[in-house]
Image (cartoon, rainbow, N blue to C red):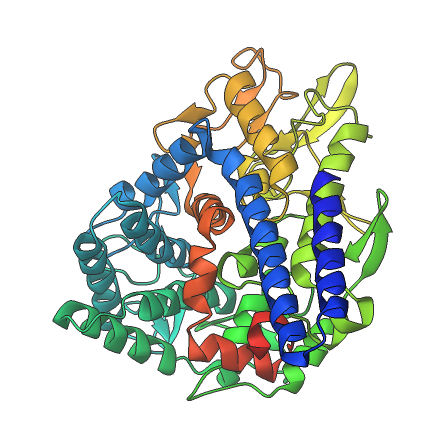
Length: 483
């Protein structure tokens, strides 16, 4: 309330000075000076509000440890980032995109030098370019510029014959690649090489080929059976995919793809909040890792009179509200212990807990919304961590509570992926805690902490012409985009 009263006083002072000056030039100068002070005070207030979350060192530690996951577990020569660690299986294409973005954050934070970050990025991009592409079922990392979902650590090729050429994972990889293209803007040979390699990787993606049923984009393609039977339609994590496909300088999709994508949005009221529905929080987070969605709107959001950033904030609050009500009566849920998204789970099995039959899941998407719920008692830190830029006032306390109250969840690289206090067995009498980190869940944590702190990734991506072109072709206007 104090900040609001102060703001009103500044505007009133500006009005009084404007009326008192007889000369129009003096009037305008007085108005400009007072309004500048007002804006400066508002900005200072916002910075102070953000700074308070970093005073005790917790977010510093979380961000540094999570960055170290990418820096220390990724192969330095190939840039292949593990899908999970320490139980290593294969490399995740999307995790590489998050890793590439984290390297710039690490350079800005002083975790590594800019030269070290640049070398890691260049090694990654050059390796991705060096592996063969083609329609063969084996021995390639992708086709037509797209990459397979999972890659072998031995040579960077397709991991198995059930792994799809993934449109969304390619989109997330390209987001990281374009971030590096815009961040490494010096004229040194290595940074020039980064920009050239990034340009080559992005330009060769034939986005319009991945449209067997245009204008939508298919979820994937298999050498053995062709295109995936499903297309990406909103609202979900594929926003970033469509924006980068729209912005392509070589193989763009048509602008009507965006209106078709948004046509299936579900606007509903849930736990007192009205927003475009998507149950797991990762769907609200992934695009916002790279795109500052504050103040810019497409045709759909202009009608609703909010933006996607606010939509994600409301979804985060609804995520917590569900835990507070806890309709399925799982252990541990509450105001400071919540967070539902795609993550690991304890097991695919049914067992009796607290006198009730419970169906538990292993890895899977968890969440809840007006039209869909998947809840087996599993909470994941990436839900609050990846939403911390949307709603730090509730995400910060949730993350701290997880660290302080869930033994074994906090370790070398920050938070293990998830926990479930209702999974009670002889081996887990106090509940289950994961023993793996997942790359695609670590990424939003390190990136969104930085966006809360400095807006760094957002600022870098505002310089990228391909993203800007994609946003404008999707019909976004307003805010920083108009400037």
